[in-house]
Image (tube, rainbow, N blue to C red):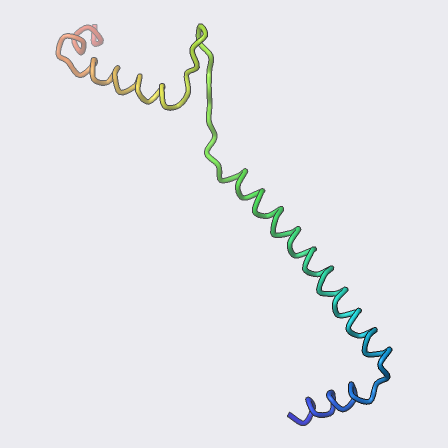
Length: 93
């Protein structure tokens, strides 16, 4: 607590121009450090978004776009058709 009183007394005894210089220097440091921190945070956020976004594969087949959703649907239909007894016998031949 004693150190705080000494610092306050030192600041009180400074000329007004020195106080304005200290305030300006403090504001400059806050602005520069804040913008560097903001820039780093922005870049890290964008890199994370790019790396964590699921990759989408789309193919064009005779004018139709085949993407992951269509592929999953086709696999489901093929599995459904292949689950019948007659198709299983044909596939094993």
